[in-house]
Image 1 (cartoon, helix red, strand yellow):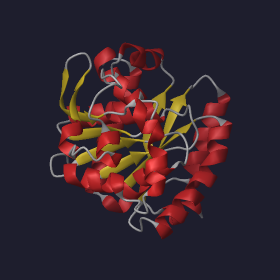
Image 2: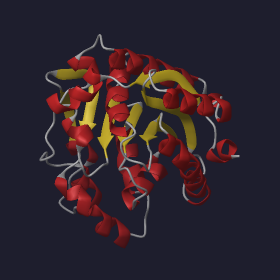
Image 3: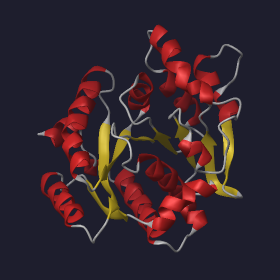
Image 4: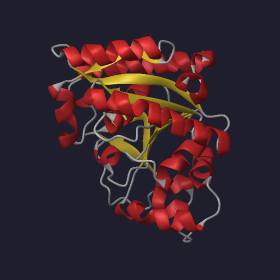
Length: 269
């Protein structure tokens, strides 16, 4: 199962979700591979790795030096090994891969790489760039299902409809099997009326898609990346760590019950 974590808007908790969902899935005993497709490399550094790792996904995608997908695998080290979790990190060169990918008429390069790794990792989580770039399109072509983090603020909600329409176009033209597994509410602050209002709107319009777990705005969760650690390592007793453990269980349940996932077209109506 290949899951892309996507939102074209930045600052909604996308990378935080990709990192901590991957770690939590691994901690629940599911071998998981985290793929950092964002040239910023925040998912890579967020699990204790450096963005100077070689070979990285860039070399496998566009290089002709013979690097295989298996060569890109690295253990998460945050600060010690995380059992059941491996990482394919982003390097600085990934930012320039758009040109090479654009010159290639194929749009399944990422899918080719990930399918070569999928026998080793039944769960693959992809962190995508906060834009609908060619790299992101590759991630959508490769994915079986999508998780969309939605910040509990007005502008994030406003952009959700546009994102779902874009996903439907990609589904029609490039990946007919693409499904949205669910929407996860992030940065929820119970003290703010706006957070509650946005949450209620999501419950009203997307009752079948919305994960029950709500990720709170949490200081420890915000601090963890600066130490190169997922929240489950940095402070496993924090509300943020508890939220991602519960989200991972929901994801596992939805994988086991695929009828809970919905096509983009069904959601956008």
